[in-house]
Amino acid sequence: MAQIAAIGVSSSGLVLTFATSTLIAICGIGRDTKRVAKVYVWIIVTLIYPALLLLWLKFQSESHVPLNSIGTYSPINTSLGLGLREVVAFSALIIGSSALARGQQRREYGLIVLGTLVFILNPWISDILSAFSAKNVSWRLAWAAPVPLLISIGLAATIGTWSWRNLQGHTLTTAALPLIGLALLLIFVFSGRCTLAPENGVTWSRPSPKLPVNYRVAKEISDKLQTMGLTGSVLSTDEIAAWLPLSSPGQKLVMPGHTYPIMLQTVLPASEFSARIQLFQAVNSGKNDLRELVGLLRHYQVQAIVTPKNVSAKDILPPDGRISNLSLKEVDSVDGKKIFKIVYRGLQ
Figure 1 (cartoon, helix red, strand yellow):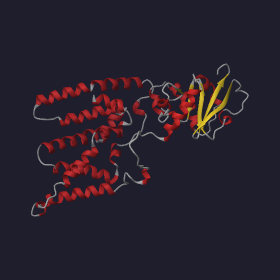
Figure 2 (cartoon, one colour; figure 1 turned 90 degrees about the vertical axis):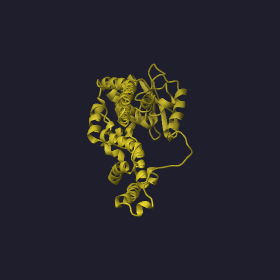
Figure 3 (cartoon, one colour; figure 1 turned 90 degrees about the horizontal axis):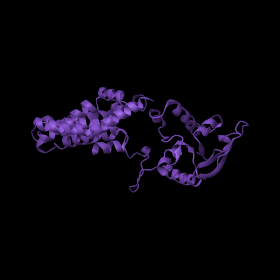
Figure 4 (cartoon, helix red, strand yellow; figure 1 turned 120 degrees about the vertical axis):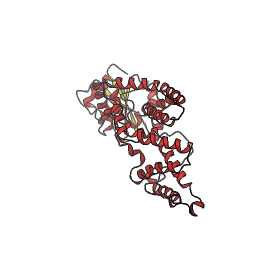
C-alpha cells in the first residue's frame, strides 16, 4: 500500500520505491536466515506493481524522448546543503553509530547509515540510476533515505553521552564526544542561511492548502470561460494554464502542465510538441504576436486566449490582409489578466 501511495503522490516515487526497499532489505539483515529470506520475498512482491509501471513508462516514452535526457541534473550531495553542512551531515552519521549504546540500536542505526551511504548518497550509484531511469533521479534519490532524521539521531546520541562521570576520570575520547557533537550541531545551524530567514519568503498563517495566488485567479478565469460556452481549446500564459486543469477539469488546453512543458516531450510526438510549444512560447514571450501561427490556432481550435492585462487585441493579431477569416475580441479581465475570444468564419 505504501509503494502504491508513493507513486500516486509523486512521479519520483516510482524510482524511490526501489531505493527505499533496498534500505529496508539492508535493515532486515539478521542471523535468522529463514526469516530474512521471507522478508525479502515480500519486499520483492511489493515491487511488482512499481516494476510494471517503470517498464511501461520506460518503453512507452522511448518512442519520443528518453526520460534520462531531460530534467534537472544535480550531484547527489546537493541534497545535503553543500559546504560545511555537508561535512557535518557525514560526520554526524559516522560518530552517531559509535555514540549509540552497543546492541540492537547501534546495529539498526549502523545498517541504515551504511545502506544510505553505499546505495543512496553514493555519487556513482546515483549517476548510474539517472542514466537508466530519469535525469532528476541524480539528486532526488536522496529523498529515499531519512537523512535529516539520521543526522538528528547521530547528533542527539553523541551529545547525549554527556555526564558528570565522563568529566571525572574517564577517557579523554569519551569525555570529548559530547563536545564534538555539540560543536557539529552549532556549525550546522550557523554555517548557512536559516530556514526562517526573510530571504526565503517564509510566512506564518493558519494551516491551509499550499496554493498560490495564481490558483485563485485561474479559478475566476475558469468561471468566466465556462460562461463563454467554448467547444475548442484555451491558450494561456503558463502561471494560469498550470491551474486550469484543476479548476476546470473538462477544459481543453493547448499545452497542459505549462509550468514544466519539457516533460510533454516524453508523451507527445516531436511534431506535435513542436507545434504546441510555438503557441506556448508566443503567449509567454511577452510579444504575444500570433500572426504567423494562425494555422496552428485553427488546427487546435483555439477559441480563448488568456494574456497579461497590458496586451491588446492588436498585439496578438495585428491588422493583416491575410487574416480575414477570424477576429479577436476582448471579453473580460480578471485580476491583471485579459480574456480574448477568437471567432472563426462559420464558427461561434
